[in-house]
Image (cartoon, rainbow, N blue to C red; front, side):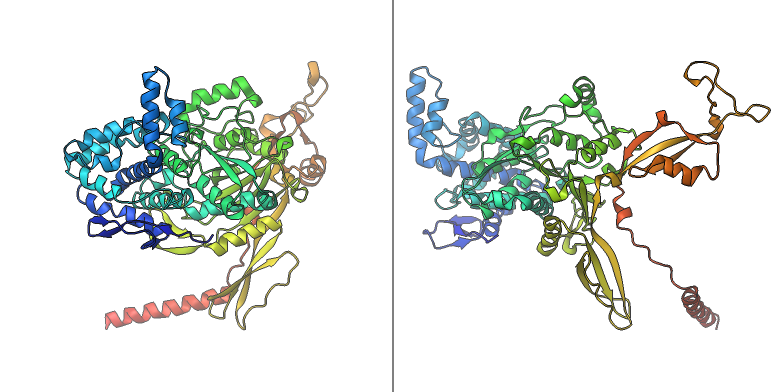
Length: 637
């Protein structure tokens, strides 16, 4: 996306800002964010680095709102005075007068606050109280007044407030899109220097961009229609990054389109940041709900066109177990958790089921969503377990479009393998009954600077390649070329049926699957119970004496065994081929048969590499042994 530029009517000289004339100083959003972040120079020493954002983010919001409301401030104050004198609820009149979704009814603003240095702490508190309730909630969740108190005690409150007051963030100079990008950059800076907790509320930007691409690529034609309006939802919104990047995508492809954003977030600080980000971008902040999505659905009854989520990996759900189990047992498929419940130690699949319940119905246009999960939801739990039943539900209902394996070390707080699942109830005909698996685990470059556990990142080229493989719905192989010394000299992606490149002279070629397309049934299996007869002392089968077992051979529990049979294989044929040649009296107890589903991702991309020839290994051992012997002789000399 092309970088936006705009005026910023301020320039730093040391720690003091000086006003400039319009057009004199131009910056991009990173420069504006860096300019705002320079307030950290004042905080250094009194605040830890990881605490800078707790001051800078809410003050940025405060200054932006102050600038947005300035043109209508006089009208709002007049309306407030008139309606309160009449004993009326002034709120609807104030919103109309402000021409915004929020207002401030206090006569103060930031420039006026600077005129009373001795009472600045009291006046800031009063000014915050003047905002409409939804905006006050943002500052309460930031715990902003606690930071104001702390700044006052360290003698920094006036300096910090003055610095922000001199930054011109009026909409005429910085529009919502530009301000949103700058605020995102501030959030990123905060997350990176707080990387011990960054993973709790911040998903790496390139992961979100990949997910957004996969989410929208099949709908590009529909999304470019004039005036298109769509909804998007994130139940684990964090600081709002997924929602923001989805909005950027639509703005880039269709400036006249509109994406209405909804979200929910548990962490108070992340919730405040997300809500502030949405406010800055002109979204309805009433659409961002606080609280635990699993126990208290903040958007009950709503369904959405698109959804994105990066739920916490491997986090237990014991705190909400009572509410979740009650919904599962009492409401079944009329609730959110009908298919089953995963083990308490990992609640990832609960979020997936929550998203399933939020999908807009197919006859209303349908829905597609992306969710980031660790490896456990692919295979944890045997046949009949909660995890297996959830996989069974999404596969038998043909909801899974694709699963993409990401590189390890991509997230701030974990280095484990992660996967992006794309699910939809509006699959194109070509995808019907099939799942695409894409192994993007080798698509990365090393970061210049490690951030927590994040050591790798995906480039724009990597993201484009995965998007193209998904969008074209093709099978492909990754061909890696090595020279005679075993060094990698190139990579090529070959579509199914394409010619494989030849190896350099003396070198070799390694071929690995990159994209595979499999039927849903490939992931299903049945656990069958093999019984053999109980024999009496004469060596003859013991027959049942009553009921349904009467006259039938009784099973010997000591000879009981189980076999795993692929779902698309005939059980009788399997029995004839694998069991009866070895135990001719065996049979299958069909009442004990269980159906399970798992997605053994790595199995589908495993490439066998034959071991080195013994002669080559022996030769290397002789060389090493010779060097060791020579070193010992030199030491003994």
